[in-house]
Length: 68
Image 1 (spheres, rainbow, N blue to C red):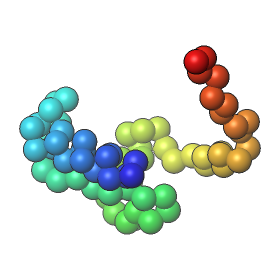
Image 2: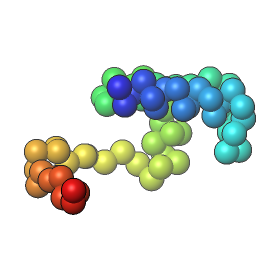
Image 3: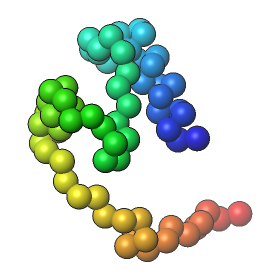
Image 4: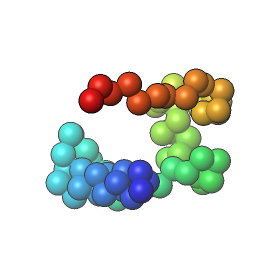
């Protein structure tokens, strides 16, 4: 569901040239499945490099603290 929403928002941004976007298409970046090409390397370089991401199980569970 989250990936589908991300794709929808990304596609709208590209089509409308919103947020200063100059891209002509949306590129999917799936964990460890992205191609090892020049554009992918540029993407990670622009973000400051690729780093390990902590596993969600290493963090405390969020609890619903909403009051009725």
